[in-house]
Image 1: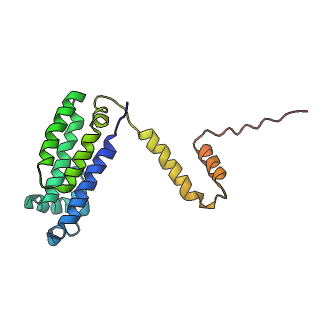
Image 2: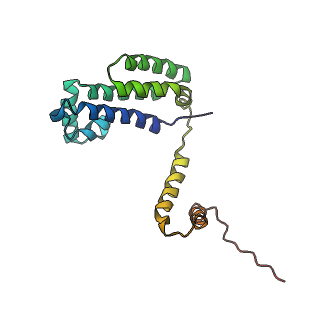
Image 3: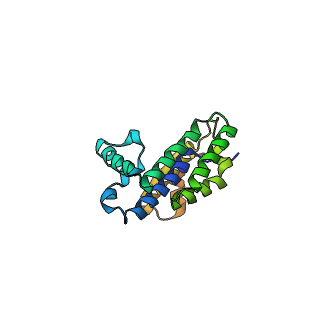
Length: 175
């Protein structure tokens, strides 16, 4: 069963918000100046200053604020109790987004629709790729430190050693 985890799906929508903000910043430079983090965060993660900035943007009801609300609305999908309920919710959300005038969110919605089965497969399960992400992070840290390794075999040895799969027991044969 293929599962697309929530983190990466939401990241894709957040990138669409940022692209919308960048494009709109030309038309609304004063309102959107230094607003990147205010429009990319969830309300509960904003600082007081970011919340003030976001409230001004939201009150202006510009495309960036609409894109932000679309992402927040999408997150309700993860509160559904079944795959069928999540699919119905997604279809309603999708129709709202594709009939909007926000190009980057339309593109993101179309991409998510292509992967809808993988997104809804997570509903009602505890399936996560957190362990794989953790291992990838460890390997990435080793790679950054690997500039001093002379060859790939030394990097492989370090990966196996630090991830606990290297057998350090040396067997000596007694002739």
